[in-house]
Image (cartoon, rainbow, N blue to C red):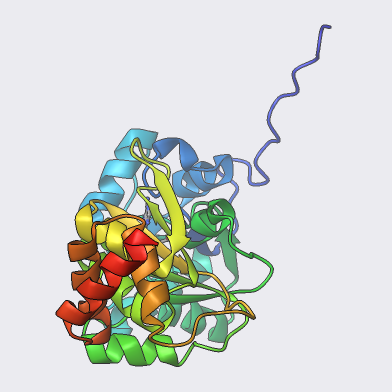
Length: 290
Ligand code: SAM
């Protein structure tokens, strides 16, 4: 059958005719193919591009063949810098990009957008890549209700408290995470909710993209044995009606045994619960023999 191939939708903003205002432009999170036609038109037509890091933005613009005036805007930008950008946006099109993905999503821009709106400047969002949304779309966890909660605290006590504060929420929890911290975060989640379904989405849109899911305890054991590399989104499914109670050591051990031998499993559960390793090792041997 001879199927007619339709040309792609034309971007809604013709080149050279951008209205003044502030344009929040999403950029790729790894795969440079994930820039939209509309984003290219806006970046090409902007009189000024505010960016988190001029070197990172410069690389993307070079790839797109766009020459533009850049202005650094990070979390430490002074009110004067923001006021200058807003003033420019009153008269000319100004774009805001972050190093990757959607600006403002664990990235700078919130104050700028708030102040631009308060000043009566038109703010337009040019949507595109966002790691949290990509991860949610592929993880196979309930997606009808979710809470994006940025990065978990680094310190153990604060991390556990942050997780506990979200314990009863009937929604998938989405966090940004770093490779070196994943093991401790998963151990903390496994200690609270060993049987909870968890997913780790890594290196999204890149060559080594992967999404691994399982119980919190089994993923804690897996990543303790195989330290990850790259960029990570960590997702926790909502509580199930039958969720194992806190410190159900058998559930923790069974999940850890799925990926590790009795010694390693006992060590991991001991770390997560504070229960003596020798006791757990003896029980792990029993469970293994069942
Ligand atoms: N604004 C970005 C967005 O829209 O996704 C997020 C910026 S935040 C500073 C960076 C974090 O996003 C990383 O530490 C990681 O947790 C997540 N991230 C960014 N790119 C990713 C990727 N390709 N794969 C997995 N996670 C990614």
